[in-house]
Length: 160
Image 1 (cartoon, rainbow, N blue to C red):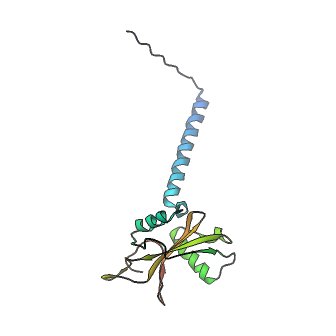
Image 2: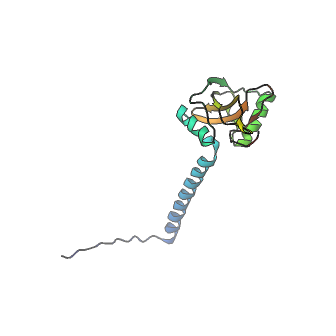
Image 3: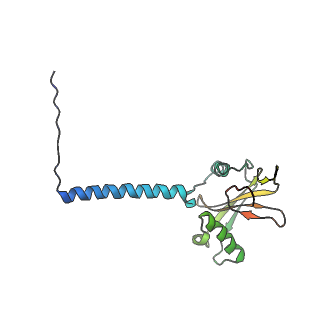
């Protein structure tokens, strides 16, 4: 039995070859940068469901309540007072920026944290806030609800 194999070659001019290679390289570079940005940018974190929120906080090392203990809708003001300015400074340290959300509505989900380190025993009255706009995490913090408490970013640290 005889088998035949056909091979077709296409001859491109040098300029056309260079253009095709350049377009492929640009497409690969664009996809790589887009993927990298989605991985490292907090703006790329989609938390549309409660289970995604819990998975996100658990992934940061927090042991949290199985459901939010509070959920409320807030409008991020157009004009900021000192509190919002300081809060956005904390968010900027985490890679978030509320500036583009002025005048928009967001939901704040509050979860109780059970394993905030405080010596040998976990500290009490600690919560995590997730601020979500259109299914995307736009801000967040971990704080103490006690008088004179503290506020920090979402990442788990040994001390506040």
